[in-house]
Figure 1 (spheres, rainbow, N blue to C red):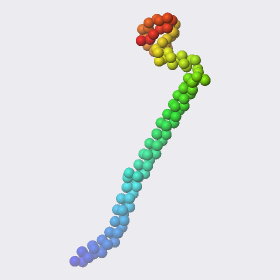
Figure 2: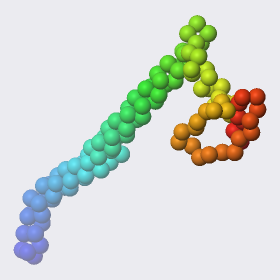
Figure 3: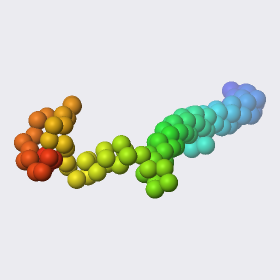
Figure 4: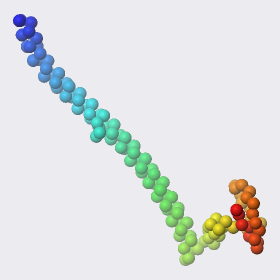
Length: 117
């Protein structure tokens, strides 16, 4: 009987710190690994940085396209750009023109222009 009462007396001194330690461990784990924990925060920071890089790239691309569109407006028409776009859209190349960087494609000569097929 003395052994049981001694275990109960010692258990009272151990239970409080044990429960406290378990609570601290529980909250520490979820502070690191939870849905709103430190690792989730770091992951979201990485995703935000990646999204900012994509946004910056798209803003630069849009600015470049805006500059090209501005050159096609009637008040500031760039003849070279207009000719380039017309040839690209219509598929025409001058009869004596040379296409650099593309494979040779059979053409049909038509009144000084060649139709690329």
